Image (cartoon, rainbow, N blue to C red; front, side, top):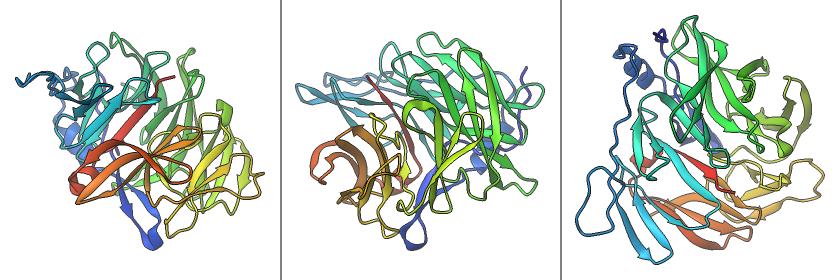
Length: 363
């Protein structure tokens, strides 16, 4: 049986306001220790807590769905007060989420579209084009390597890929644009129970192998690594600058004076690969869409004060979380800041602040 790891930081996150409005990714460590302490080594089958209803009679085992309009449906996420509004043809689709700072992961089922609790992974990101998922495994391997599973989303069959030796472990997996590679941000646990940024790892999906790279600059990976245009480089924020590295751990280029980091749950880079997102200033009153090559004379300024983003909806629109009443709502906005549609509502701020959402691109 797999050997159970010691405390690891999972992939749940809290986005919190920091000094001068800069957002920080706060580590969630305690829940992992508690979760692993009670594990017997056997994998617990996921428990469905979704409920579907297109009639007045609720069904307890499926996601509850209502139809506010003929072309849309509203899904109440199990275990939460959050509602997601979907339409056929949407370029993004919610495929997994975590609650209570990562204590529970819910994954969308292939056959029914309902969300079910999954205890095998800390994080789960689905590539809808290939129907494969990357799951960060709860257990270390028997020789004390952290692992990521490449999962057949239809059947649950998986191929386990070794990533890094304990105490280095992966978080926030990301698919390359062509689906050939996976990317994970690496952290290192300390004897004091804290975590330090370590670097990143590239997963070769076809080969079933991975290579880990340590980036020694302080803060590299605090805002996690993401794919650059074309999927042949990765980027991250380091000391207020955007840095890019190749798939062999080599530094490629640095973009300076490109704003301040903003937490993006999905794609930092636009579908065409031409622009990435940042806060225009540390005050966070607007977003800037900047060239990934650094050659634009001036960024596109989007008058939106969202400090937590879903990401690019398409090349001309963003999906952004913003304050609404006592909680939040997710909206689609164009690059002039005009709201085009509501995507989700989260009426309870404390609940929302302890959730993480993973959307997948549909086309």
